Every structure is written in C-alpha cells, then in structure tokens.
Image: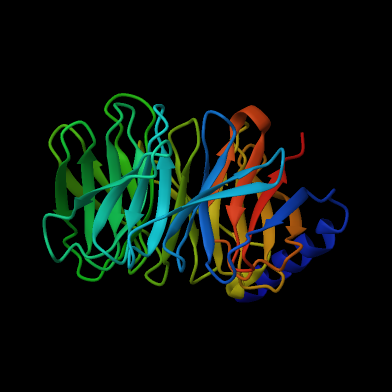
Length: 328
C-alpha cells in the first residue's frame, strides 16, 4: 500500500509538469509578521482578512492595491472573519473568547463574549442560510451557534475529549446543517439544527486527522487529512468514505481548502516549500493542477472562493494576501 502511494504520487508529479499553472498574484501586507489570514470578499469586492498576530481586521482593494486597517481590542488574537449582507464584519476573537461585530463605517467593535469560560478560543465562523452563525471552538471542544439578531450563543460540547473542532461548512439549503472537522481525532461532526443534537462520525483510518472541509453540490462532505496526506469524501446519504493520497504524499500536510463553481476541490499542500495549490476534479477522480505559491506560503490555512470572479483568495505566513485565477 505504501509503495503504491509513492508510485501514484510520483506519476502525479510527472504529470504536473504538463498542466498549465494557476495564475497567482500576491500583495504584501504592510504590517509585518502579523499572519494575515482567512480572507472573505464582500459585496463590493473588498477582500477582508484578519491579522492574527496583529489584533486587526483589514481589507485589500484589489483594483488599487491599497489596504485599510481597523484595530481590534488588544489581545483579541483574531482567527477568522466573515462579512454579512449589511456590511458588518464578524470576527472570531480567538485569544479573548468573544465574537466581535465590526462596523466599517465607524470602526466600532461590539463584543459578544462566550457564555462559558471553557469556550476560550472561538475559531472559525460560517453563515447559515438564515443569517445565523455556526462556529468552532478548538481548544474548548465545542461547536457553537450564534444569533446576531439577539446575541444568543449556544455551545454544544463534543463528547470525544480533545476532539479539536476546527474547519466548518454549512449546508446551503433549509436550516443549514453544519459539518465540522474534528482535528484532534479521526472524526467528523454534524448538528441537526432542529434538535441541536450533535453527532460524531468516525472515519475508517484511526490515524486520519481531518482539518478543513468543503461541500460539493451533491451534498458530499470533503476533507483534507493533514496528518496522513489524503483527500477524503464522506457521503452523508450512504455513510461511504473514499480517500485519495494527495500528490505530495504523507508529508504534504494539506490544509486550506475550498470548492469552486464547477465542484472542483482546491487545497494547499503546506508540507512542501514552497507550498503548492492542488486541484482535484471529483467527476474524473483525478488531480489536474499543481501550482507553487510564489512567496513560498509558509502555511496557507484557509481559502475563500469568490464565484463572480472565479478566484480563490488566501493569506500566507509569508505575510501576503493572494489571489488565484482558476483555469477553465
């Protein structure tokens, strides 16, 4: 099995030389060593992101290359943000146990503290179809639900200790069922929004460590196994799991992940230096693109697909915000 995986990876790397590279453009963030991450494109085309080590939220205007910064309360340690249709920016205060609402018109930040001191590190936020927010709490071991209308926060404890709820996606229809990667174990998590019952789903390989998720239009939940170097697919209807070794093999450390408007999966191998953006087509079950990130990347932790421009956006540990124009 191991030999077959190496052979498979070697063939993919040879084929990669024949694939046209994805066009990647990077903008250097003007605040050094702040780990810019988790970009989100708003309705005006501004690319918002947080400076995890700089206690700020900011946006890039791709047309001009100009950055605008909003300082957050000291010690926030922002990990992630999302932007609603009214233009409010919602921020995971990872180091200070709160969700924040930034009003870009005034710079004011309204804080919504976690109701349980054990929920010390809200991690990744995602909108549900009804405008509420699901989120993960990695170290505290919770999946959370937040209602911006009244500020109510509900926390669901994960039964498995140290499960480390990490990446999260939400079904786009109905009430929006969340799916979560439990990075500390070989499990996925999901919650029934009607009953708020949390379910654990065990993946076949005990050593698997899913870190980020994506959802294709057929309802399948895709994950990257950071520890083992696999791309995986879970079918909620049948419970079937399929896995493919990624081109970089066991040491690839696939991390940031997204799906485009053609249901193609994109993720970044953070083990190689430079990091590599990899494309996979579920229709053919083949990897079809590998592109090195010009700055090296360091680590690409999260990605955002912007459908109107067919671009992927991500932050890098090389202190850049990057745009990848996807091939046809």
